[in-house]
Length: 288
Image (cartoon, rainbow, N blue to C red; front, side):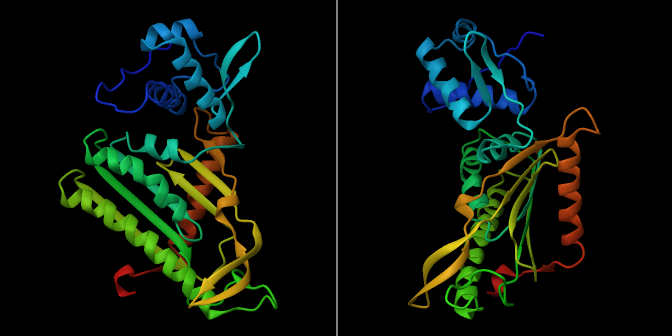
């Protein structure tokens, strides 16, 4: 079957190469271009999108940098088989918002990365370029009112309430911002139904997990590294869970129920539900 891209938005203010990269990336994520499939030639893409060859080349470079395609000398550009490969979260979050019903489950340390990934799709809803009918976000984070394995003081690996209070404030700040930004969309009449729930659990979160629309799962480990932070006006040397060094691995549901990707997504969703419905406790953001 010949690939036919969706029409570009004439009101899109992004540079042409970004528009092309976004269109092709969406086609890859929705399986219009399947893993291992060869992309149309540069000439064909130039004719499809109506942009210069240099624009197409720049878009393909961006897709390669993102890990979605691989260029094979003398053969062309192919969709990469992305199962268990490092992947960027933001494009998949944005693509999720093109569906009528959006569900995002997040388990991690503070929801900082999720907060950043949501900004562009929420902006597009505000200007009418994305129109989901419902958004449901569940956020599962550690309870910083109890001692954690990390962060701890570096000198003796001991718990320090100042560090927990600092992480608590960071978590509340990001989760409250996510909740308020999404609730605003419902208040403005842009999304008919929205819900953001936050629950805490007593265990230390050594990994982060995203389950998006029950179709894609992203998983990555938090490395523990020395760090220096200021807590309550005091500089403290600590061992910290470092989210910015987390490599996310992507798994997708596909046509085969027995495939690794499908099973990974199903098991990730099962794990999240099991914790959410048993040992996790509701957290009142407004009571802080």
